Image (tube, rainbow, N blue to C red):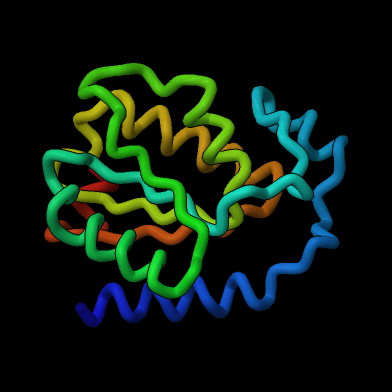
Length: 146
């Protein structure tokens, strides 16, 4: 519960200080490869990336509920089929988010879909300065480094 309260605090604070006059430009977006959405067209406050079988009924659902209670517009894909490639709608949701929360869990890195999401999130971070918040759920950061 403390983890969720900390994440809520970080998201609220970050969203408060986020201005619509971002320093990213169209030229910055072009440098990002397949990232093509202007940061001024943000639709979501938070995008949550997670491995469903590890965290769907635990931290992910609790975090999602807490964000919604705070009226923080959140994208979460509960319907992505296991092993399915990340599609255009999921890429757009990542691109249209101000913050991405990545819940690294025991099996996160064994999912091609999760790794594809992670790559796209990092491209958006580079292109637009999107805030990325890693959460290490029941693992240590050194487990992810390996």
